[in-house]
Image: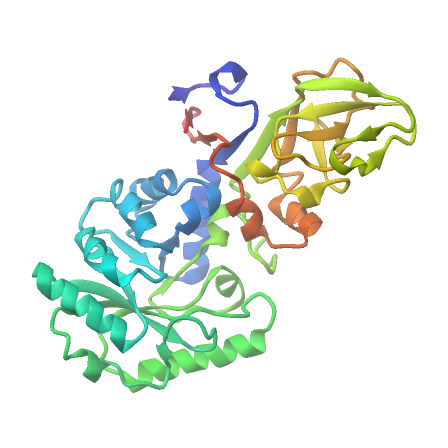
Length: 377
């Protein structure tokens, strides 16, 4: 559904919703490209970190000429292929695909990871049975100790035995780009050593992630920004990034609390004085974490309304004494320019990734376009 304004809240099926700013998303893509001095593989796994992979990938393809995308699972890749059907688009699966589903992944024209010889054999056999050429990305372990071949292995000669496998990319992943540059430098040297051992290669290379783009000079074919595209970067070096998602709700109910009365499950808050509390329809089932209880706040205009009591599954209670009793329907900012995902992550002692990915699919996404219209999903 397309609308011209968010003023009519009745159009949105829930008073709690997320706004995804497409202009900001496009600007973050431009920043990533400029810093990389190369093109990018746009990481849209986990439903584009909670932002909506299909919508954002389609926009990146049509408006920013992005032709390479990365997901974590086969299912994510198959869903993305529904909106990116062009043959000039590569969708790289970064995670493991079960042996029994490799054929299905190949039929969807997904680029599959190869991280050991057993798995290369599985892919080769499936491709032979389908009478197609399988496109793969070599995953090289330079220090993450996760998926990947050793960086010291001569792979090209060994892979020649698989006539129906075509290597599109060789990729590795930084373990400490946001906290320990010395180890990251060791990893870059190891990746370069792998490329030297396998000189004569024709595949593209990709190493730097979001914080890597911010802190290192790129000398490979592609970078792989993920969090960066959505407006965050863990070392906070890049100041021009803009958060793409904001989260909103409204005050649904108010009640008067007398001094000494308690609020919510477990009675973790007792009113220190007579006060007015508001109830907003958002809870931990929406991704508003229980760890925000008695710690976080929302904004009604420029007024901070502190969370009181335990966050419930579907509702959260806030102190609206300063707003007064006539605040039912008041719009409140849960996350945005003034309460960023970084702020929420500090309250929860976690990282921005977990906050963004945790916004559940029962929260409607409203996409704001440069042309001044909105699309609701």
